[in-house]
Length: 467
Image (cartoon, rainbow, N blue to C red; front, side, top):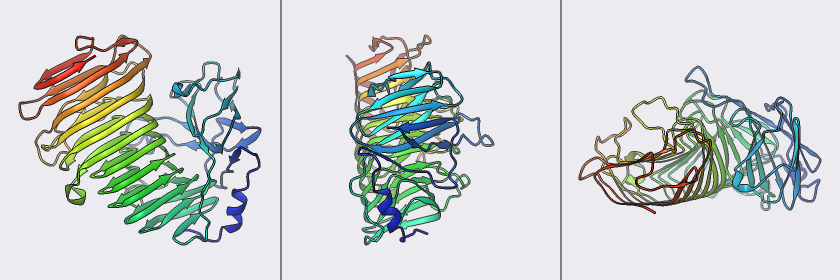
């Protein structure tokens, strides 16, 4: 269980050896990478090994990678040494951050960072063996180990198992801590904070100590800020029947097994996710209904300033399971899709970047995608907008879609003769697609019109506008 006798370590960990840098040594026993070495302002930063997909269950759509984290303010110089790949063709994503090397020679490079947080993927060879770099802002209000209601994990490796949180409790995971276990939270005014890692790798598929590695169970007023979540045993961050949830500076890397969804928002309302990074084996962000909280509507969800990368299925999947009265007022703004993979084990389901697929008579309405930048690498599909009954629907009926806007969407990257398909389809007069606007959707340099290549509008649709 958690430790409270960490006062000395707490004081030491908050003393900064450099005026604008805080590095956190990895604990003894943590699995480190030998693919990269990093220094920031001359200070070494430990690099962790990222696990690859469990090949006994499905083809390995993921692959080996490394990740590291530190805190900073002002301007810092980052030096990266790649021990196995030259960096002459390196790309730093998201390119919208405008981070470029100041020096590259063979396996060495330097660049400056001026904006915190900056969550980057340093790619010598695209998706193969990248370094994920999580450069946080400096921590300003960490709790003390002796504070009332705080469950504190200081630097070190902890075999925690199930961590239970309830009303007015805070879980704090310090930088340099690796906590092997899961979190079940139920109650009000709950916080999960820190700079350290929650690691679920040791637990088999769907056999962890908690339902998911972070399970928010009918919670209200929740803050998650700063932590790294690694390799849950199924879904990772699951919100079920919650209200008023804020997720900020959240870093997730999960390629451990099938069903490694990033964030699942289930019968939950009033959600803010911002300044985060999600790389997941399955859907990055899935919005669902399972009947929690008396079929509470999914309402008022905002995701912004976040980078997404999936290695199977969808980046966004909204609908699918729809035991809720409605899904509405959902906004995604200022998002970078670093990579997406459309391999999928279910041939009846289109593995698109964005899937809006309501079922079970549920209305999906008032959806906005705005300022979205997608690295398109020749995948066949981009958007699927159609009521759809999947194998997971409990009630075998379709839903409805209305009032959706896609504004300032760009697809760039490798053009292989395919612009990325956009499909809108209303299956019948009761299950329609209405009032959908595509405004300044640019695919490989060309504005998208209704008669553009790879655009299909069919069935019972109304008010479909391209401009």
